[in-house]
Image (cartoon, rainbow, N blue to C red; front, side):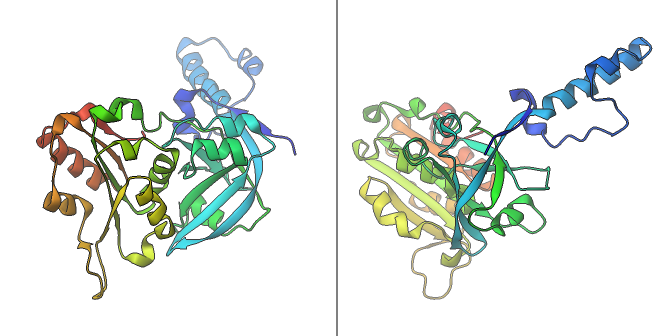
Length: 296
């Protein structure tokens, strides 16, 4: 199985879906046959450069090794990259993501990697938590089966810059907030290990509509044994629910308990409004904005 090659510079990765009209010549040599009208030359050159960047993104074909339900509308997806050690080793930090596309569909999805960097290196696989949204590449991906081929790029992004809240003795409190499929890179963080047991107060506020929408419940015991207290928060629970209800930001405000803002860090991933409101609350409590980590 040989990789399929295309390219783009890091600056153009977020524009990989750019479509170049078919009447533009794609070869730089053919561009030289155009009259050297400066205005038209500049306009054409910028389009040609964009096309070259798009076409040179490195895509690697790899098979699905697992696809199974994780929760309502959420799927566990594992991709075998054991034949591509450089690809596996590109995942170096929790919170990184990559582009993935399915056969015959050019538009990619950006997916956060749920497994730890060490998992990719030792098991030759990337794991994801994918939300199936109608009309998207993610929906098509969730409809595939084991052995089907997909194309993916190397891991990209800065990830969660945990060194900002190290050493653990200086940041005893770490507050983690996730909603929906935003728990995916948080799982990578927790299972990568960030010295949670060396900190006195590590809490994960994890929001979902209800328990049927909450992935990774089977991992909660393991996460708690690593030093992370799990606080599930349901926005639409049934009558039997006795835990926290509403939104994660409200559940946090209710508990608060920031004992020392100077020694507090935070990690956020999920719904935009939640992230904005939590950031505002934390800064209002005296937490340094540079210690509030996001993966983009």
